[in-house]
Image (tube, rainbow, N blue to C red; front, side):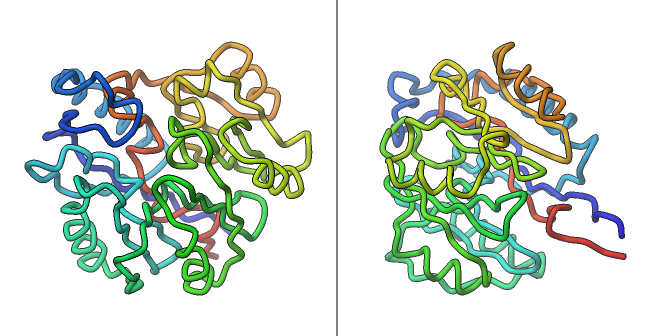
Length: 279
């Protein structure tokens, strides 16, 4: 049995900018990103990921500055996809482009009620050791969508309620890792959500991320096998991850932090070697 090579969707930052405020990180950053620097940083991330996964590209579109954050295109399992219905009106024009890409690439799309807010893999993260899907709600995904996700993918959905607006998607504060480990920032979640995490993940597989690392988007990481690609991680977090068998690579993504996103936000797994196995 061999793992299929991972395939990750990315979108070049041709039109990336901060034109509006839809999360706290954007406040005061309007027009701030250096597009040339953003292109360089995005390219470095793409090249690092390409060592371990295939890269698919969705074309950027004018006047859609956040389309670069492909984690919010939808969520995928096998040949099934659920495209996002964005809560912020500013991002809703992205939906048609992402749905078109999924359809053109032979994904079966769920016809989700457009009245329900849902923001894709920003709020839907498959556990790497158990048969469930961690699914956020509280800011950008509504809990009403959870039952539809569970039924469509035939998977248990574990709700995680976000309570800090700085961590508006669960992928900003929670990262399932290969082998059933998780890296997370507990204060971003309510009590019941922390209990849900702790009841499923044994203590030795829970890697706590402190306020400083969370603020540098350490949880917003790309994990492929034992590799973790992240904007920044403190020496003690890197030590914790190393002791669990992971190798950390830092890629400067400072321009994208101005819009409230980092490595994970810039990627969407289309084929995940943890779930897609072939002989």
